[in-house]
Structures are given as C-alpha cells and as structure tokens.
Length: 324
Ligand SMILES: C=C(O[C@@H]1C=C(C(=O)O)C=C[C@H]1O)C(=O)O
Image (cartoon, rainbow, N blue to C red; front, side, top):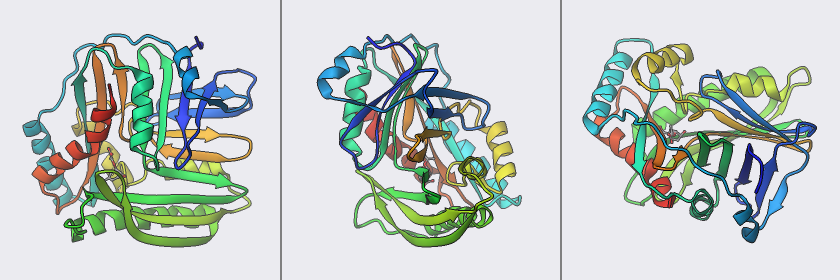
C-alpha cells in the first residue's frame, strides 16, 4: 500500500501509466493548482514510475463520505445562464464561462477501475487520479493543454466551442466567435512572452461523443521570460473564465454560487526534461457515497440557455459512464 499523497497519470496519446510518489528530496514536481490560485497541492518526485496493471492493486486507499452538497437543478442553471446573457449584453463582458456541480450518487466507486476506464475512453486526453488525502481524491480526463514546454519551445492551444461529434452538426457563428476570443487572447499573451509564434487552426478537435474547435500555437519563450511567468499569465484563459478576465472572475465569484475549487485550475508536471500543464476539466472528487463532478461552458450574447444545459450534460457524460 502506498503512502498518501500520490498520483497516477496517463499522458495524452501514451499507453503507459505512471505513479508519482511524494519524496521531499525529489527535484521534479506535480502541481495541482486551484481555479482562483488560492490553493495548491504539490508532490515532489524523483522519477515517474511506470505502473503495470497488476501493480494497481497495491494502490489501496479509502474514500470518505461526502456531506450533502447543494446542486443546481436544470431550472436554476438556466436562470443563471439567462442572467449571464443579460449581463454580457449590458456590460463590457464578451464571454463568461459558467459552471456547476453534479452529484453522482454511487456507493461503491472503485477509483482505479474508474481511472482505467477514463484512460480507455479518452486516449488523447490527460488522465489522472490525484490522491491528496481521504477527503480530497480527484479524478479526471482533460483534453485541454495549457502548455507544453521543452527546450525553450512552448506549445499551447485555444480550445472552445462544443457540439455533438456528428457530421450533421456544423460550427455556427456562436462557437466560432467564442473560440476566436480565446485564440486572440492567447496570441496576445504569447506576444508578450514569446517570439516566433506559429499558429495552426482553428480546426475540429474530436473527442469521443463531442467535438471542440482548437487552434494550436507553437512559440519560443523570450530569453528574459520564464515558463512559470507565462503559465501564470495564461491561467485562467477565456476557455474557462471569460473576457475581459477580471470582470468575468468577479461575475463568476458573485453568481456561480459554489466553489470551483480545483476544477478549471491547472495540473503541472514539471520534470527536469520537460514541463506539461493541463487545464483540470471533465473532473470530479470521489467519495464513499458518490462523486462530485464539475462542468461548465462558455456563455456569450448568442447563447441559448437550454443548449448550454445540454452542453454541460454532454461534457459530463463520459466521466459519469466511467465512474464505476
Ligand atoms: C469549461 C469546460 O470546457 C471548456 C469550455 C468549452 C466550451 O465552452 O465550449 C470547451 C472546452 C473547454 O475549454 C468544461 O468542460 O467544464
């Protein structure tokens, strides 16, 4: 049995699972950063330890019971989306990402089996099971890369806009606009910290049953700037917060009515040889009596509240199916 805290991860497009054990003398870091930057958990480690399926059984740990949590029902969520649309129409805000909790009442979730199911269902996503303590066990599989850094080359993506992954669904002005806002914003930030920026996209990024729009960026960090400064400047992007940034943060804080906690924060893997950062989406916290999931979507003046509700239902579908 491993000592808490620890994490198991599976990188995008990689078939290997790795264990990250906490070792105070390790020079590499696994960082778990909350949405509003008020909390951070860190594991320091020596090496990523490859873990084979039979070894997963050694990862025994117990889940604690969750207190009752207040969840928005469909009507409440639609009311909140309508309020957000009104606010956008009557202020300088262009886009605000609104989110909610879902409670999945299940009495015997097996974290390891759930993690493996998430890995299988999302081969191109970053999957993790981050066990900080018995009350704080996070699981997720996120498609969104906040940054890849290697040898002064920095790559990132602007990911936004969501539709069912079917040919009959075409990108409308609403999704094209909300993704362009993210893309333009990321380009502006990169211009401050990087040289030689190249851009690819936007193009469709298909996940299992949903698709997003993505623009890929590649650049070179300026000699007088650091990767840490750049990540802090990028987070949170308008993919998970909004535009303008501070107005959106304030609106979210005053209106969402719950604590996003580590949802829409970022997860960093700061290894000697590379640095990879992911936005913590399609995630939740595991308990002995169920799972608390987190999901949201970008609201603009053109949003349709009913569709926004279904978007959050679609985004949570895979994790709901994988938690077993
Ligand atoms: C906010 C989430 O996803 C983000 C919002 C998207 C959107 O508004 O269409 C798409 C991808 C992500 O950048 C989430 O999954 O909870």
